[in-house]
Length: 173
Image 1 (cartoon, rainbow, N blue to C red):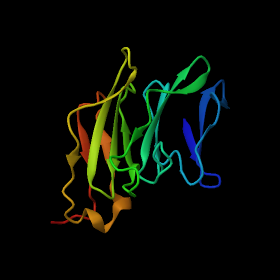
Image 2: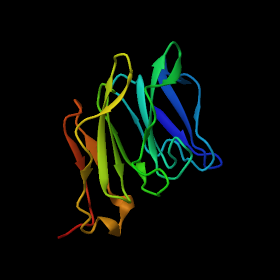
Image 3: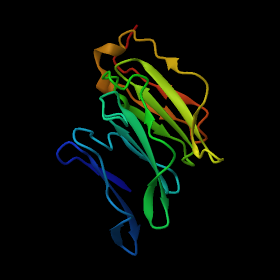
Image 4: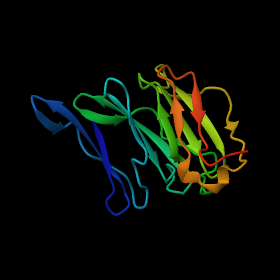
């Protein structure tokens, strides 16, 4: 189980596991930076060893948004590869904070930029770089009536990471 709570708008993520009738914290608390809102959204792989966290801030501290992926290794959470940033970190794109998805095995992650209407999907490559590599190019989401209610949009990724979906519940065109 993953719980995300915000404190001073930094965002803190606590991971818990149920053992012998008791919930106990797994690893350290993950904390964001000021006004980052780390953990909105918060996803977990099928085995509970990889978590993907959306953020309002990019890795350079600007407001473009990002996706952080952590892996549970040697009793604690470690950043898996680089932080995945929005295309324009200086612009309020909402990347990651408006839609993040994680495959069942934690090796594919998708980020959606709700205010700029694009998405990117990445696969983790365990080689000399040990980093996230984009799968294909960015794809644009037809804005249509998407701009009406960004908060109502939801994203989904198949368990194997090969199908990505974004919804627009308020679109009736």
